[in-house]
Image 1 (cartoon, rainbow, N blue to C red):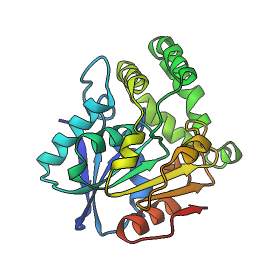
Image 2: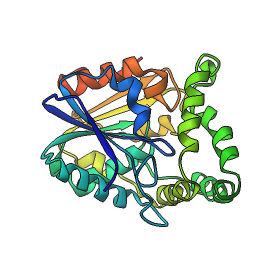
Image 3: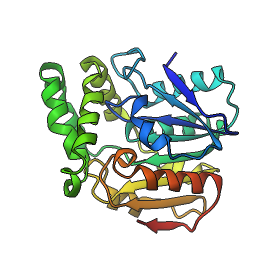
Length: 260
């Protein structure tokens, strides 16, 4: 079973799924600012943190199945699910397979759109670097996930992200990349999921095509969209405002489209 930790004793259950080459400790700064009304379950995804590698390819559906096992062990009947980046892809797969278990779905610096051909090719080209020069892959790539305008003041957090990424085994990173290549268009989930959908994006996010995402976002009253002045890692760059949005949206209601 996937490694997981539980904090808080609130009545609203919130499961947090981290992104590629992260682990559950990446939530610590934002977690401190989340409402005490939540009971938070942080999960190490397959091959990340203390969770084992399950297969040569970690599909988003495989991850969703393993997340369900954790939820069932904890006897969570209905909960909020939030996924960062790759965790968002897995959250969409979960919502497609097990919608009856969710109170809400939050795409946190992630997208429901599949990789285009260019992105898939970029991922394929990364195979060899991950195998042969993993530290270089991490040290070269991680800074690009943070806002270019603030990398100097974010140096400590960039170094933390590098440290966490380097703790990932190369074979697990490779399994994750292969799984992300295989993921499919989840527009139908966004169109049909009955509960609240929260989408939080970064204006300077180089990993997600936010203009395309926003353009293709279904016009539904249960979808709320936020764009923040940051890069791909809002939980590290803008933890306070991210937590405030999550607290307000999942526990209350706000107008539909807001930009911060």
